[in-house]
Amino acid sequence: MSDLRPDAVGVAVLRGTGDETRVLLIRRGRGVFVGAWTIVMGGVEPGERATQTARREVLEETGLVVVALYTAGALDTFYDPVKDRVVVVPFFVARIAEGDVRTDAAHDAHRWVRFDEAAALLTFAAQCRLLDEVRAAFVEREPEAWRAIS
Image (cartoon, rainbow, N blue to C red; front, top):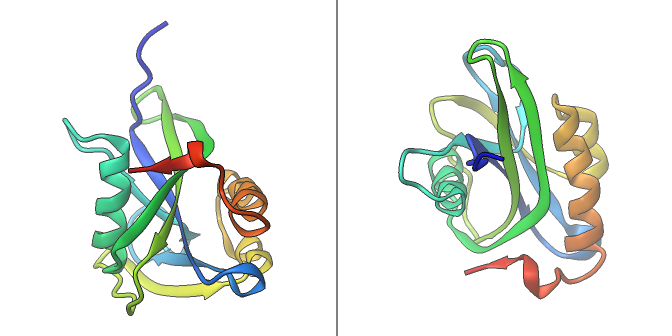
């Protein structure tokens, strides 16, 4: 079996605790998915580890600094008809430093929402499924030690 290197990453950015936990959604302002609400997403650059991509993309797309990064223990795979290959996207969870969101040029809006609100807004089914895992493993209890990424 070949080495499955990730093509991109997805990051569920959280703030607050317990019932006050909110997840950040950003809306794509251009491109094929214009108008789509998503979690933070971005491509892995050559020589970059997926964890580095997760931190970089959160900063680039939101202006927020990741203070704690975790593996969500989930990933998305889908067929890309343009590249004629299967794309692999691991998911991460980030806790961020306080600050105001400053979306980049590729996004035109953002919202901090409850999990039920996120499920109604998200465009991609894999991201909706991810939020079920995030709520169970990061909101309803403390994440297990194996999830932490230094």
